[in-house]
Image (cartoon, rainbow, N blue to C red; front, side, top):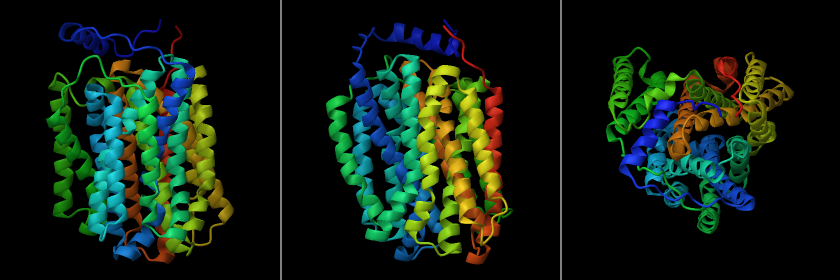
Length: 481
């Protein structure tokens, strides 16, 4: 049997369980049909989380016209969701481990649905931004909890790897399909419809989770780490906030420099506090292993690249070239197709040969896609655009399963909620950073200059692909039992 990746960490968890809690009965093994039904229900919720991360992108111009808001305030309508989501994911995972994963999952569905309705009727951009933040609270109870439910329903490592591949495929599809869905809805029903559409999916997910998803929780409840949670919110919020506001307040202004210093101090304080807590929000020891640290940073890189691509695509095609929201969304179909086809293939590859090969493919395709557009101009061929999008989509599809499986395999199943929270936090932090960077690159740029202003963004996409190649090089094929 292969040695555990974090033997001390697991030994402490097991010892604490044995000394502080009675032994809980082993849950019954689910049938194959029930296990994959549970996966389908979790994938439905994950589709919502991913969809609402990107569906608003293609609607930003229409929202701006409807609510009389500029690019800077519109960036916050996107990042209010991703910032709150990234900040609360780990705590939500810990809450699920303590109070029951299905229970927290269903609470998240209700909060997410209610906030979606508030978004749909928002009278101003401020109200929309606030409702998006509440939506992020609900989403934080879905992403890591859904993954924890899947991990606990499928104890076999090979089956789990395949399931994570499907899970990643659905999540990738939702992220890439958001602009297509949003463009079609806006074209026919207006921008508010991108939020109304969540209601029937929420109702369906609530019913199916009640019928098919078994309740589960960690053998030992973890205490909430309020100091760590507060510091994590400060680090993520200030870091992304200064990226959004930097072009407007000046990168070297007193306000910006103060924000840099505050973020740095908060980050150091977070590491210091977490390394000294008995039950930390995010255990720094997890990042001592290069494979786990590379997976977390790789998740950030993948979602920076994806969100830079989606926002620059929206602004360039709608503002720069005058395309409709529907046409702009349709242009991302090759990206959605690449992600959907390659994610389950990646999951099977992880189960058979490990994470290295799919990560190499992910990095190679993503780098090639970004390089296609480093010289983008006002009249770049549609063929070149579509080629770039399909390459980036393929890279995105290959990346998620090995990154997720590496992180989940590093922790015992009882801590699956926290493991899911860490990887999901990395993804959403990357999404927020990507939106902030892309918006900053084109802030204040007239339509004719959008293409030239966006070129550094495509260089960044290529750099993210190169980073995945480095992560792949550092990874190792897992030992066989």
